[in-house]
Length: 111
Image (cartoon, rainbow, N blue to C red):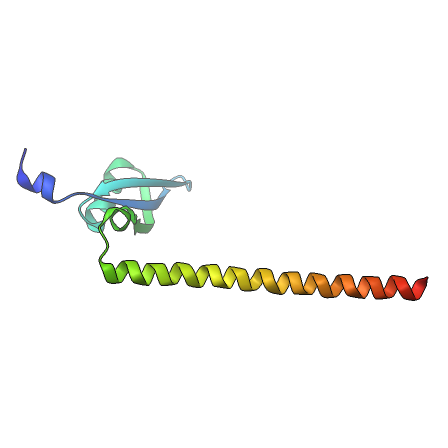
């Protein structure tokens, strides 16, 4: 086994491949870079007319160790998301209470 086989890990690429018969196929391949991924897809699917939406999966980012600053930024972003969700819930509860109050007032005026 060569050192570059261990040190240079392959990246996973997702792609939509249009075949010559008009069918679209979604697939993923592992390659060193996007150019190699495109070549590999064209070789695997001999009747390829085009390769689109070639994107690199974020698996490398998920497994990479984050620095203290990155963790802090991620924590703040998570807190922001939570606070926004709490705000939406509070507004919805207030709107519900207001609507219930109007319903009570309307039913009192009918009685």
